[in-house]
Image (cartoon, rainbow, N blue to C red; front, side, top):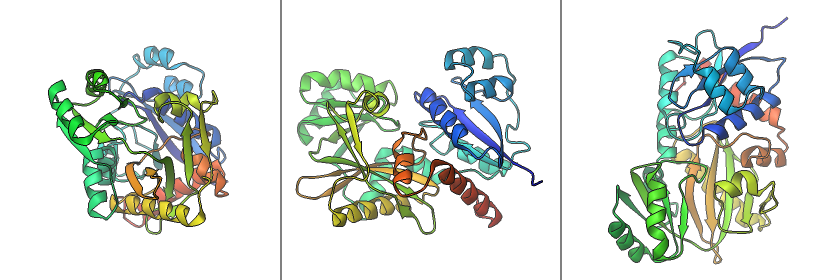
Length: 347
C-alpha cells in the first residue's frame, strides 16, 4: 500500500484575518483526498507561537471554537521545527505574518515544499503600493493613489482634495477588506483614517472609480491559466468584510460566475489578471480584483496570493465553473508544489 503524504496545514496567524484562515483551513480539510494525505495541523496563535498536536487538530476539525482553541493552544509547546517529518506544507494564512513572505521564507529555510507563491511574490502581493507600481510599469492601469505614513487628518484631507470624492481609505498591507472605508464626504475621513491606522501605519487614499467589480483567479506558474471571471454585485456599499463573508449568505451580495460580460471583454479581464500574476512572479492560485469602467477601461486594484479557500470563496467557485472540483484543485496545487521541489525550484 502506498504511503500517504504527510501534509501540514498551516493556519491561524497573527493578523486580523485569523478566524477567516481557520474557516478556509477547515474547508480544505473537508475537501482533501484523505486516502492520499495524512494531515498534520499546525496553528499559529494570535501571539505568534506555533502549536501542533491534539488541540490544533480539534480546532481544525471544528470540534473546538477559536475561543476555546486559544485557551487550549496556550498550554502547548512551540516546536523548534514544526515542519519536521512533513512532505509538503499548505499555508492557509491571510494578511501579515503569513501571506507576506515571512512564513514562506521560513519554509524555504527548512527546505520543505509548500503550496503557493514564493517569498518575493508573497511580499509584493500584500504590499498594495509596491505591487501597483509594478503593475503600472507592466502596462496595467491602476487607480490614482496617494500613500501616507501615519498621516494627520489634515494630510489626508489634502490627499482627498487632490483626488476628489469618493475615495477609499485602506491599510497598505491588509486583506479581506479589513480596515477599508469608502469615504463620500470629508466628515467621514477622520474615522476612516483611524480605522486604517488600526491595521497599518502606512495607508492609501485611493480614487473611487465607477464601474463593475470583477475578480479573476489564476492558476499555475510557467503557463498560468485564468479561470472564469466573477462579477461581484453588493446590493449596498462595496465589497467589504461583511459583504465577502456574510453578505452572500444573507442575499445582500450577488456573485455572478461566470460574469455576464461579452466574451471579448472577459478575455481582456483574464489577460490582465494573468499579467498581474506573472508580473509579481506568482505561482499556485491567486485572485486579482479589477474594476471595469462604463467605457470599458480595466483597472487592476490588487492581487491576493492566498485567496479564501472556503467552498463558497471566489477562487474555488471559479474553479468549479471551469470544471475543476475542489478536491482536484487542491490536488493540483499540492502536486505543483512537490513538482517544483523535485525540479529544485522551491523559490
